[in-house]
Length: 226
Figure 1 (cartoon, rainbow, N blue to C red):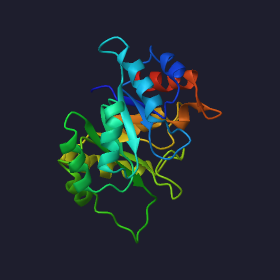
Figure 2 (figure 1 turned 120 degrees about the vertical axis):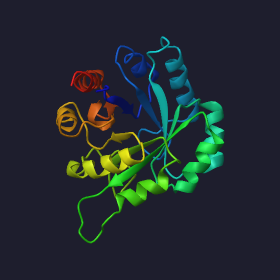
Figure 3 (figure 1 turned 180 degrees about the horizontal axis):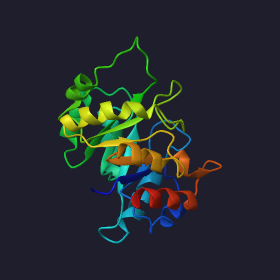
């Protein structure tokens, strides 16, 4: 079985990124949506430049996190920041995702979906939902529904819903990442129970709102050694 991929999201500081060079990361996330972890295009360009300076074959790829962006906004930012992934974390339609793929064919497009609790009055046809995105995105990411925002809540969702999304994602050949409240203490439970394609962590590897190299190291080691 292939290694579970790891994405650490919400990087803001070049010196912190330099301290992560020894970690076998697959992706780092740069947040361009409203958030306390938001970075400017200029700061993001410095972070990506630092990634490019890492030894070939070991540097993680850069994913930009956006919420309901305009195509022109993406184009302007990508002229400054050479991202590998555009992660759409809002209510972006399949049509918009297709437009992004067509406009930037060299960049992967990921779509995040918010997962709320079980509600018998709100039945989501997951297959129909993913069918509508099939062919318009390169990966799917599940995050905890947050009525106050679009992710980054630090809370887990009901993991028992993961198999429904995994089956549907597999039917459309979509890699599935899991986010939402992950940390070094609970990630092994997720891996043992559901074996996701990838995991995405942000607040769970922070101390006092800042990325903590000890927590990041522990998280990555527990994923890669599972």
